Image 1: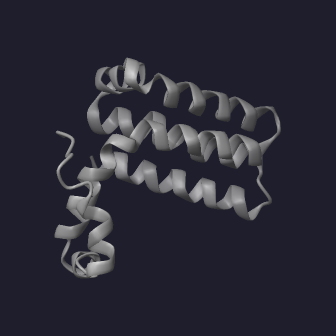
Image 2: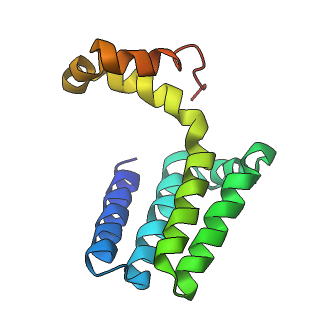
Image 3: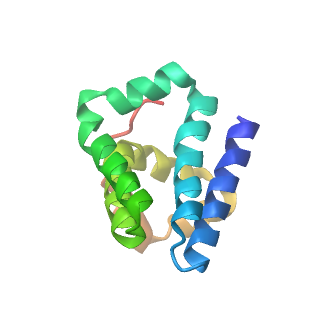
Length: 132
């Protein structure tokens, strides 16, 4: 798990450098492939990663992410990142309820997210937790 988190850090670092260097497609591609391929494979296993991406309910997100990556590689990084972001949201939208419950239990962040105006946003997701 520690290796997966380290590789995610590299992915964020490369994506940040890609944005700083005016959407450099090479750095953005490394930043996008690194977390998706390596982090998920090392964290949940290769078989589970493939099952996650090939699940029928995740086809829209998988295809959008792949098309966005292809658009990024051929030289249109801004459009590619927009399409990839849509695919990312579609792929991982089932995890937002679980993430909201986790954030509310973290000591420092939990206090912030327990405030009434923020809590009202998270309470709508509380009943729909995804098993992890």
